[in-house]
Length: 116
Image (cartoon, rainbow, N blue to C red; front, top):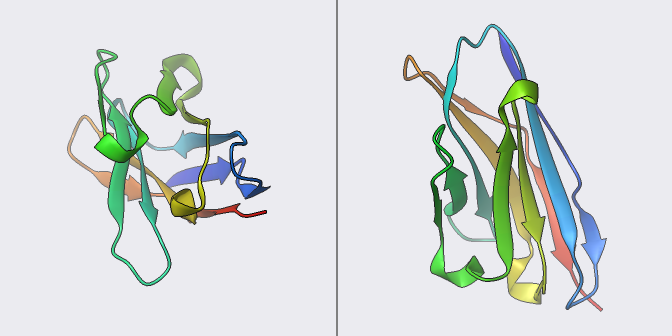
């Protein structure tokens, strides 16, 4: 059984910053990809950023230059540093982990609301 525990969401003013964390635990034998997706109200879930085991990353154009993804392999944790937030970043943010055997896991989601 694998659990993903997300934290760091909340309410922030436009231009502010938040840092999301997602820690994986349980019977997961090697992690390949870790990443963040988001689902704005009334819209489909979309990729925010992912990071591979070699440290390479892929980010959505809408967050490039503002969001940074990183991971701590020793802690099986992925982070998303979000700067210069705008109301368009308001969404439920979901952590995703893909194990080396191809198993796919999702977190429960954490809400990020950008509003004055």
